[in-house]
Every structure is written in structure tokens, then in C-alpha cells.
Length: 83
Image (cartoon, rainbow, N blue to C red; front, side, top):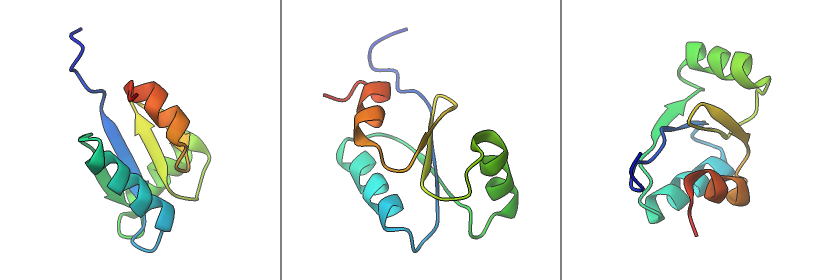
């Protein structure tokens, strides 16, 4: 695996969630590609998020299918090798 390969990043959000917006802004600043899933509009995604993590709150950030609940910058940086 080469160094520049980024793991898949999916963030489960709602439009009114301030930490969701902070997380998305952080990923954009760090040039991290991510898929934004709005669980307020997608009930199947919301159910999937809850099944996978036991969480109903957002943001839930999935990095290489491992969940981070909330905007935990330290965990995000560790999982994505951001210095």
C-alpha cells in the first residue's frame, strides 16, 4: 500500500449539527475526501449508522469502516495519519 492512499471516509451528519459542520470543514482544510450522509433525509442510512455504532447522535465518522463518534480530532488524525 502506498503512502498516499487514503482510507474511505464517510461522515453521518444533519444540517443543523455544528460539530458535523466543523468536521466537514476540517476534512476540506486537510484535503481529505469524504462522503457526507445526511441522516435527517436518509432513514436507511440513519438505521445503518445506529446498527453499526449503537449511536443516534451525529456526527459519526467512519474511517475504513471504524467508527468515531463525535468530532474527535486526535482519533481522526491518528487514523488518517494527519500530523
